[in-house]
Amino acid sequence: MKRVYVWTLPTRLFHWLFVSLILGAWVASLEDRWLSLHAAIGSAVGVLLVFRIVWGIMGPKYSRFTDFTLRFDALKEYLLSLLNPSRHYIGHNPAASFVMIAMLATVVLATISGMLAYGIQENRGVLAFLHAGYFSDMKWFGEIHEFFVNLLWVLIAAHVMGVLSDRVLHKSDRTLNSIVDGHKNFEGENAVLSFAQKTVAIIGIGGTIAFLIYTLSVPNNPITLGYNQKVNYAKVNPAFVNECGSCHTLYPPTLLPSESWTKLMGDLSNHFGDDASLDPADHQTILAYLLAHSAEKSTQEMSVKMMQSLQNRDMIAFTQTPFWKRTHRDIPAEVFKRDSIKSRANCKACHSDVEQGTIEDNSIKAI
Image 1 (cartoon, one colour):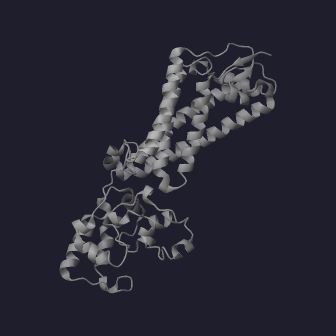
Image 2 (spheres, rainbow, N blue to C red):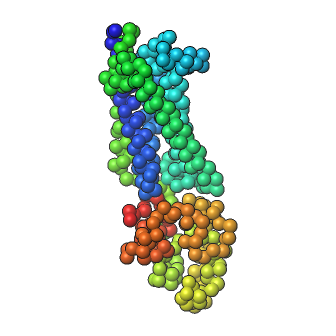
Image 3 (cartoon, rainbow, N blue to C red):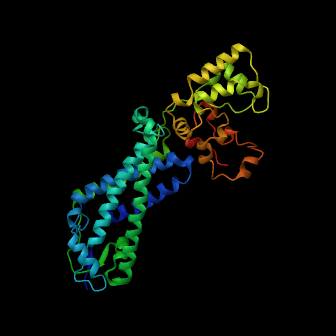
């Protein structure tokens, strides 16, 4: 049987770069402190998808969307004749065609929803301008992104199962091998690249790699740049720093609602077993500052999620709040007993920016 050239080099490079970026984005999602890395890789996936869409329109034979078999009658016929196929497909068979289109569409939606979540929830990246307007609904954007990511894994599993089953049932076709060397065992027309297609491929593949290198190597680039402003508490409220920060971590006012701060400041003579009483002037200054910048007045992710988790709005021990327990539930109890931490309330042991008024995911220190 004749060997036909089906997948040109740009198509194969897209496939393996796509696989690498998806795996990289998944690994970077495993740790909150790697969120900027996740955003950078996810954005590179978006750039690569733009190339694939263009390639699907003007690419070579077999890689164009018009070559995909997207008919349900053809899909039914293909599935019913897997053991004894009545027709062979040089490019994508009907099942692969449907899965590939679904996969590309899902990744597009996952990328867009991820950029929205990153901008609205984290106040970072090119869509951070949406943060202030949608912060009260921020959790939905993350959940939508997670839905499309989970759907993608289902489609990837279907794709892998299809390739493996084809390897077993139709080994002579060389479907699996073809994504490495580009050739299948069929009678057909070889895929050929024109000058314009080669140019588009260089721009698309090379541009994706250059974009990824840029976002990973250039600090404060527009793709990962954060807009949550750090606060110099010593400058804006010296009493708050001197009286509160001298004994424990300087907890941002945005961490608890006004009811909690009112209750806490109303019984400083019994401040978690200690007498932390203040003179009236300092007491009034600090209380006014805490109330003016409490959680319900903030659009930061930690503040919004704290407020959404609270039923009892006058809790003063933030380590007992549902939000704190949920975000720290996977940390073993013995970690908090280490000499470098000593207490669950010692936020700055892990959150290097907490005393500057922010708790950014990428500022979490490894423990």
